[in-house]
Length: 401
Image (cartoon, rainbow, N blue to C red; front, side):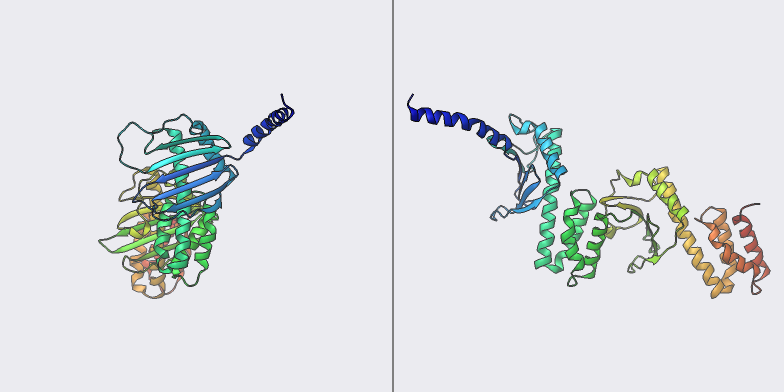
């Protein structure tokens, strides 16, 4: 063998292990592509590296590519590659279902690591692993799409940002998005932008609070189209509470409400018994409530809601009863105060109604009325009939010795 040939042979032999090591060390990349003419967006491109470095491109098919860089948390990136491994990195796998399915968009999964490459395309698949991977990809891409839309509206269409926020919140509530911390920058900009309508700022601030871990809260709403009245109680886990009693055609006007720790614990215990409303198929938004009862639970990104004319379970019956007791108590609080301060002729009727409500178990915490009843009992300006009614109610409220 010539010296030159020998030299190159030795050089190639020495380089082979280095090339193999370089290929083994090359970072893996996963790519998801979806092409669906007529959808929004028509083209979706998502590429994620093992380290979480990622690009997203969402656009119409007529637009040129404009990928934007972002970063995924390590656990999400690892989940993508775990699903890819379950599918043999798309080498030698067939995902397309044999069933005749309408066009749902052409999807592509691709894996690259050095010279290793695997790719598969499908319209619809029945593979559990592939569908899990597809769902994760859709959530990641959809999240980036909403961020891009909000940023665009903030720059070029401030009047349209409220409707875009509503669409975003709908997806947020329906758990169609992921990695919620990535929304904080754009939502912060919206919440702090004084050029925007106040409702958009408030909505963005509320979403920020949920993402950052605001206390869990439950909201009870009751509407009656026949009478035209709307009643609501909103209770947070830290004790902050408000209520509304107004006509349906009036603007919201929440009032502060005091709820004792004991009553708050009873409500959240009943909510836990109802599994925090999980699994409900009731998805109308608060803006579109027409009638009946609706209960909503929010805790971070979790948003569960149920609506009914009659409680479908015993747990929801208990929860509904507690909120109706609170609303009844609010009503008597107002009526009794008005009778004592403004309309003494109404006092006997209020006391009789209060006695009946107490007998029927319609009050959340009857002990609240003890001071007012003591006032009736010992006041020189009240009649014997009223004092007798007050004494009767007090005997029911006060614990027996």
